[in-house]
Length: 564
Ligand SMILES: C/C(NCc1cnc(C)nc1N)=C(/S)[C@H](O)COP(=O)(O)OP(=O)(O)O
Ligand SMILES: [Mg+2]
Image (cartoon, rainbow, N blue to C red; front, side, top):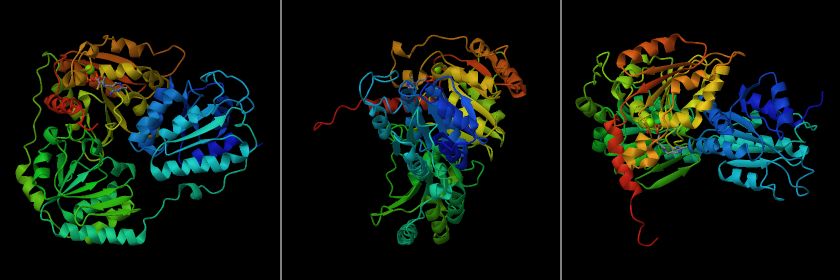
């Protein structure tokens, strides 16, 4: 049979480890979808809309390192751009493939699913702004070079890419692909830079007494968790995590000293950070949200190890092209033991707060839901926490060894957990996946529960119904933070169809007793998702959210600088 452009793309996707591709069909991508579906290693997964399609690919990339979503031109791609923004912000290689108009029509005719003008490059130009590489195939002969370039850049930069395929090229003859090693080969560190960075860093640290390691969200993105552990155990110092890095270091490790989040830190992490005389920042990202409105920007000198660079505070030096993995391994060999901050932290470590169980019939509280969620956690559990008070409830969880934690703190798209967990579970079906989401968030992407039913995915959705946008209320309230209340339990059961698929189970809980009953049923329900609507009072939110909200509101309301 003829080997085509669509076959080339299918083969490359399979070769980089893709086993599921997320799609919404449209007349510009149907031939391409046929070619992808024809590949034995690829399984097509339909999504209810392109926002969810791109977020499902983002969640898939969290589980297996790369994801792909295939949409139609403009009406599809514009919605998918939001999930691509998340992939960019979260350093995830997601490949956005968009169908496009027939090449014969370009600059000749006006076409549907376009802006209705003789302009066929606007989408490519938009994609360039939110990806590390955007290509549009205009002739079949160019397909191999363009496809390989885009995929290679996605894997090298850990950022999304864009590939535009006109509807009449997918089925055109195309060269066969050469070895995938040429596409996936990583760039090794520059040897002199690596040597100098390690020497400089170990001298810099030798001159310090109280080192603390601060782990950021990028460590997991380059798979550096194991070499991080080597460095941690070579120094012996206290280790704290940024909130978006939760899950990338074992919380049962003796050196774990909590989540550092300024005034809303856990386990007194901020006290040891404030005592340190040097912070070893590994894969860290300091934003208004992660620094509690800039009130928790560390002020001590830092050694900053990023994805492919190292920066020292003294001497003030910068080393580019030093891969994080290489640097951590070499630094672990070079550093000397210094457990002084660990000794000090062990004196500061707060006693474990034993959540008091509420009595069965009392009105349900946020704390009680968090307490019962904690009891659910096992080494096989993955927790997705949504932007909202769920962030603060999730961050407080103590993860047993092996438990995984996903959060989208940089992009912060409410509703992300539903499609992202759907994508994630397709790549990691063996894990028990639990979502902590809010009523406002759920209303953004609820349709994707329908695909969990269709694919019989037993995700447990803990929907905290506090009647509105509570984070926003705590930052700055107004009528706009009120939303229409839904019958969430009834809604998910509307996705059950006689024509097949699994079954969604919708449960309501108003008391502690009802939550524990519902959780027992959720764990037993394997043939599809279970949504447990946890009804709590609208003012019942974490004190951390209130504290954090005050500082973020203050940061948001700074008057313009004079010279602007
Ligand atoms: C509206 C908005 N943020 C603005 C926003 C608006 N649109 C998108 C896509 N993402 C966003 N973060 C946020 S955090 C709501 O409080 C979320 O409400 P909910 O899901 O109900 O959670 P809480 O009640 O715990 O806050
Ligand atoms: Mg809410």
